[in-house]
Image (tube, rainbow, N blue to C red; front, side):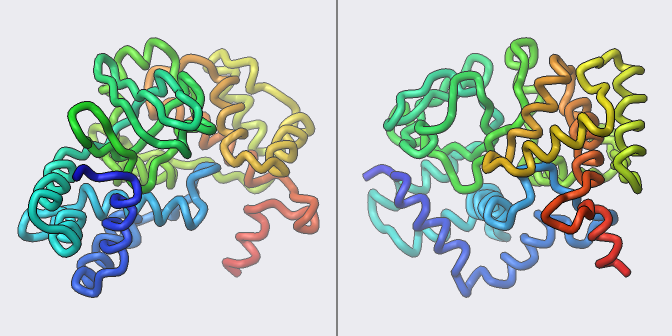
Length: 299
């Protein structure tokens, strides 16, 4: 018997609840979220809610994290829950799991979809994703091989909020991140390295200053669609702040930016936009911005 979506969730739940793994799970959590790293996490819109964060951690811990004996927690869970040929099949699938940024190449509503990573294609059986993903959207996710040609989606998939242009799609393997680097990107916090230079996140004290910073950068980079008055920016932010679609603001920014050459460039524009978002007065918060409320809390 091959793995299915329900069984993957059962294995992941075992990894989350197992007393045997409690100590190593706590240490792994600190590493994944960077609790001991300098700086403060400021998640991009759509990446910071508790459920999403916990699901991303669970996917990484169950499928990517390695225990001292070289096994993943999901392999340990399978050994506890299964036996015989079912166990062997599950172990083979778990060992074959991958973490990828892939494009949605085709959707069959109510059944599944096909993901594409350059010349590779992954046929995915997932009714949930097939109901709201569209062709040419991007997904960061663990994929688990089952059978001869099929794949399952692991816990913690993330609909990438930015449109990836055709030029990037053709070289998508250059933009792959591991789950921890992905979490740092969402946190808007990087450690300095050759591959990921430290990003200084903008944090102004007023909406006018945040808009001025964006305007200066947009003029320098020739991006007129991001040059607006602070009143226009405020209107745009409040429109999306009241929306139930948490990724729409990020998608709007990326649409305005257009074609980009790297993840770092995307990250820069989103950081500037979130600086504006966090400085926008919120009517339901007494006219205070997120940064204003945070300063009061820090005091």
